[in-house]
Amino acid sequence: MRKKITVVGAGNVGATAAQRLAEKGLADIVLVDVVEGLPQGKALDLLESGPLVGSDALVTGANDYAPTAGSDLFVVTAGIARKPGMSRDDLLRTNTGIIKSVAEQIKKTSPNAIVIVVSNPLDAMCYVMQRATGFPRERVIGMAGVLDAARMRAFIAQELKVSVENVEAFVLGGHGDTMVPLPRYCTVSGIPLTEVLPAEKIQRIVQRTRDGGAEIVSLLKTGSAFYAPSAAAVEMAEAILLDRKKILPCSVLLKGEFGLKDVFIGVPVKLGAAGMEEIVPLKLNADEQGALNKSAEAVRELQKTTGI
Image 1 (cartoon, rainbow, N blue to C red):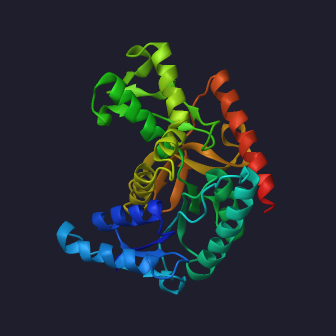
Image 2: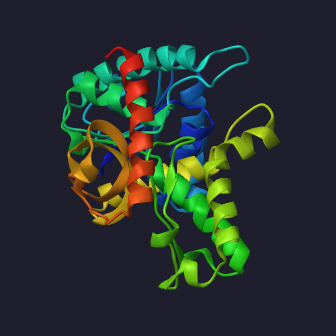
């Protein structure tokens, strides 16, 4: 029997993720959204593209969770974007309510599912999802470092005029201003980044990585990134569904790893059929560990603000 993936939220990120998943033929897709007709219309459009892209994936849309029952994997993109005049706390409270509601439906219809959270503020929404579902930490994973590392890899490849496939990068920490890019763990065809780029250029790339989402928002004016975020979520989904044991930076609940407890934060993890199968230890120097601790404190404050 073909696997089933539910994508919650039929906006730009969710619909694009559904498209990428359907075109890969990884599973049948259910697209869920509260707006009547929106997920149904986008799902039908994706279904009709199947013969053109060679995909037999069944794609359906729904406004309720009944068709999602028994899903192997959820990709949760639901939530609102921050609007003019809205405080960060207002955004957090609103999206906390949305994610809590989604979590209750997931727990009821698909109690054995793995959940990839994409909604912002990312790490805090992972915390809400995990607490509201009661799922073990292995089955609630946030998409953060995969996207941030992809941005860093793209910038490095641009600077060196090499293939992005030659570049590896790690970005840890919270998905936001306090993220922790790790140039010391970046390589170009196995060569340390610090040996092929001067420190000032590396620092510019680090800062551009931190500002990656904001740079796109400033250009779009009325929206935010969705091509790269959806691709990052799909890379995680593929690693899980195909049991690839792929090591990727993801937001997970720490229980003492990296000296941190009871906080969702981005660290290197092995993704496979069981979800987060292992947290991969890294030896951080004092500056890197200090930056990670600072990032964790910022996430902890958001977790407290959710009131969950």
